[in-house]
Image (tube, rainbow, N blue to C red; front, top):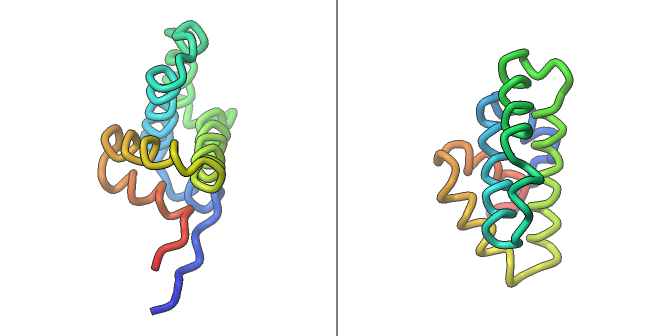
Length: 112
């Protein structure tokens, strides 16, 4: 079989529900807090409230959409540029996200 063309970051983001987008952002937040020592204050309750408000208002300001695209781009960059960190990041997302959301996120990578 030939290689499938990976979906673009925008295609994957568009396929996710608002709740899924919030989960992707929070999974990345948890990874950053745990693995890179990003200060909790950077995210904190205000950040969570902002995500919740975006979820409730249908992401009128595209906070979840932009945040998800940023996370997906970061995943792609780590996969391409940091072979040591990528398996840890991928496994962290696999553990944090529901299976169908994780599978959708992984669509940004080429598959055999």
